[in-house]
Length: 487
Image 1: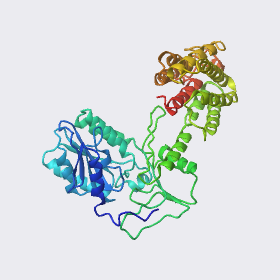
Image 2: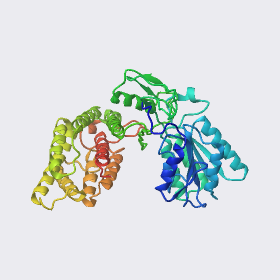
Image 3: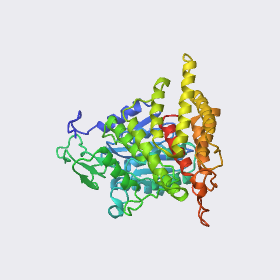
Image 4: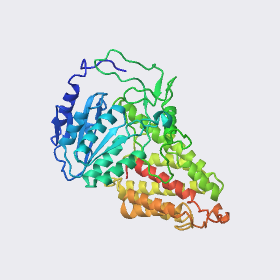
């Protein structure tokens, strides 16, 4: 923890910082007396979104003011809530005929001062509501039952969605409902290496060098527990994800996750961690989440086969992740072919019909692409068109080795739509949609190939799951398209 600062204390620092933001953003204005930064272009016909809190969490909240996000922000001193007077000034600076929504990070001072401002504005006949942003799961229900969950980085998602809705002229009730429902679906947890030091303060606590605190608040509030010795990044992230996602943790399962849900992962440093470490930790989190489809694949395969599909696919993915560590990002054709060879070698170790089908397709794809690159070396370009053409030809090669087609409840229900759409449109995003829709359609289909043909009919009222191979490949393709920057 650094206890050295360029400024000996916090006097004047907040105002200087806000003036700097406004100086380089001509669409903003600064009410310096009240430390309110607001948009000069927000029309009164649209809902006003205001947020704020103690300074020291930059870019929150002044950095969020602009079209499609906040209408105004109000800044307190470092780690101190803004006063009721300041919040009232923010409301006056951005009047709205459609209504005002105050979004607060859920801490006592913010609740009281924003709440009093709301009551004052409401007493004058203004249409105004308040949404406490409560996403922290660390302390659980028992410790937070009186004040509610604390606010953490998840509030950024609410502010962005609310701001976009207001910008698109959603009415007051629609905006309030959106913010409330999004907030209810947030679950976050933090970990701190040390307490934050504030300029001018001589007394401060420290955390042991070989320790960290899981669940510490953003103002040095006590956390869930101190972990010592310092865990590896992998073990730490695994524990954090467990607290956020475990449906069996009755004290912290604030959000019910459904396998069909689309989930946004937000990783934030709250200004206290280098971007270098933040990016590395993000990659570790992505690696751990990359294999989350394995239980579903195994479950589907147990119902329709021998139950080994999920483990086999997870084994391949783990092997690929190991190979990818330290490998340069592939952007040019010459470096692509060794990468394809490495992936193919991993698939060949998979065994089973799924491994063989994917290996045949990938071998043909790599060969087609390499021939195209060598034939037109000077003009060849690795893009959606060349990749789509190679994928289409590879699909034709694969068809020579299997009679399975769309509608037969196999991996071909995923591969054929993907390759054909990629060939026809050169758009990986559209191809992914086609592949996922194909995989979904296998649910309820009667199998015509493989061991699943020997499985009896499902029990009455029991839905037949998607084909595990088709589902697994759809998940893999999403990771490939999104992770490769094609989407």
